Image 1 (tube, rainbow, N blue to C red):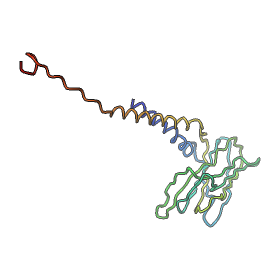
Image 2 (image 1 turned 30 degrees about the vertical axis):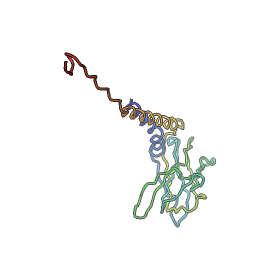
Image 3 (image 1 turned 30 degrees about the horizontal axis):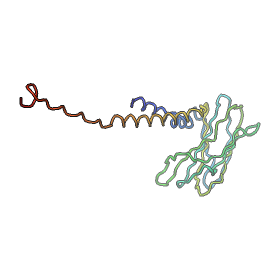
Length: 204
């Protein structure tokens, strides 16, 4: 039983945590990366030519902070808008609330944080303009911001993650119960009663 519950637990962790992370960071192929902000120079728009064979296009933003920032889901660190000749195709506020820091330069205490702005479908051949701007979050020392586009990305299935968390919970609880059951101390068997008589251990 322990093996079965362990498999359920690992499957749940994979579906609930590994799957969303892998889809966001590794699905598809990278179209390119562009620096949209440097400290002291401000933000600048980026124009990228896209084609239908690249869709869906996943839009990621990497922010390098000088000191460890404090993110909050209610605060907007950066905003992103993508437009083409027909209008706005993507608009999002980036909070970085769930971003995991990646260390670039330990001596300078620089950390890279990644957030996803969304996925662009229905790509029409032509130029797309990406504009990243400052949000309302305060006390975040931004050194640089990079825009990353990935083409042919897999769209995250929102149903998978809740199922994964449920499986992980079931597997964990079942594994704990199975281990406790195995370690339960069994009551020692009572010693055999002394037999008296010719064939017993006592004196006849």
